[in-house]
Length: 144
Image (cartoon, rainbow, N blue to C red):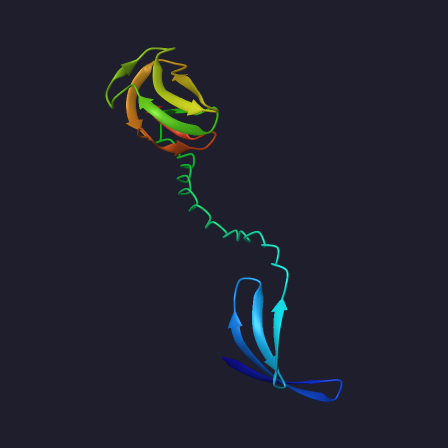
């Protein structure tokens, strides 16, 4: 049993709650017993709380593009005409290359581009490796 004291409009009331059922209660107010009824409350819809989802970690930044390297003295540089990623290097140091021969395969704008020698010569240096990101004008292969 729970007992409460109320003051309403200056009048004091001693209220005892004797029994509570679904929508009724037996109460005593200042010594008089009453059956109190109430409407069953409308069930509130459950509140769905949306929890913020942690942002997915940002993808690792792309490796920095290699800047154009200066050509060794007396050599001829084959440069990339656009930035991209080296897919394959088709020559080795010491190889003889003919004009028009593919020396490097470059992926740029989701397309594979063959970078060809525009003159014949012997490979003196290879400035890139498979997987490298290169900037526009970067030296790929040096011919002597």
